Length: 300
Image: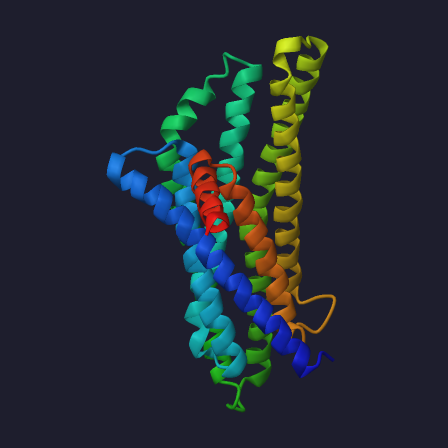
């Protein structure tokens, strides 16, 4: 059983991660969103990153409100915070998979110049963003109905009649809710996984081709490919870790989640913070802003 002191420690870690991710998502949304509004244009990658920044900001606040309200005042009155968190979490998975697909198609066009999808996906990104939003909305409808039905059944527990039927319905809704949460996450995750693995394979193949035709004036290109491969590997590891921690959290396996609640939340959002950092570093504009701020702090 985890002690109260450790719970307080992990709660502090969770709040530090909350502040970190708030700063990261706000910076992403403000920097890229301002340019979007000012110049009425953004690159497809920056459109996706802006959407991810807004999504992560909403996800973080809904998670914080739900966690503190449900932990210190357990009640089903706060289930709507949970619905908002599930919606933004599903949307963030689809946006991340969309980013991986875009990079995969873009790199594929270098290996196969006639690859026609490259030119279409650039124009399709706004529609794909809207499609991700619609898929997330449809997915969350089932979750909202399931949560509402469970609350109605729990409120009828004190009625002696049909208690067996009520218990069976509760078990069915619980199992359906677990399966629904896993399915809506595993589909975009598999898409992300396939795109990222294919992207790494294409980069590795291209790197080997450059080494076979290595010349003295092309030293920077293999190095850039090697850096991209390392970044992708790190991104793949941490996003997969985040997905697995969510699965464990959903199914409630390995340990008593209630006693390790804040420790588990701190682990999940540490992975979210690393995930956001890797996404921010993929944007030249955000990297430039981070460097300016970092140098400004050093000068101060």
